[in-house]
Length: 131
Image 1 (spheres, one colour):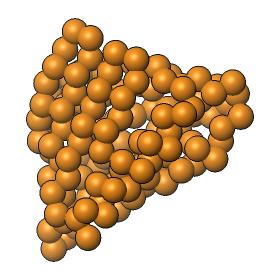
Image 2: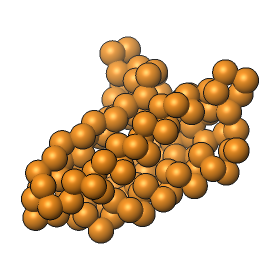
Image 3: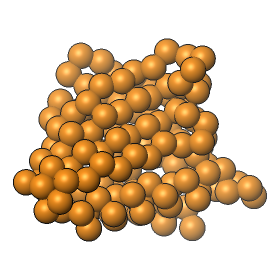
Image 4: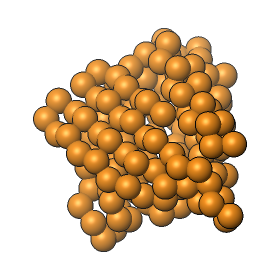
């Protein structure tokens, strides 16, 4: 999956789910002043919630909306703030361990509503590749 916007690129590649539906997530993040990578785990049901969050964001175009998603292990966090005019501000946090015990990369980037469908398709394709 790729999420990108102004001065931000994130790629999350998932492994096939194991017998308990856990997937390894290889995360690569690049901002205008930082670049890093780490591996964490995401349960398939969590990933499907991310897809649902993006679908809800797409359905909210034209309204002011705030939606959040993070994985159970607290390695990846997104907060999507959509304005009624279609601009997006996305806050993020990334950590190789959970947020309370490890260094955290956090910040925000901007995009517009036209990115949402691409992110949703990318997230869906990532999980479909593992089916």
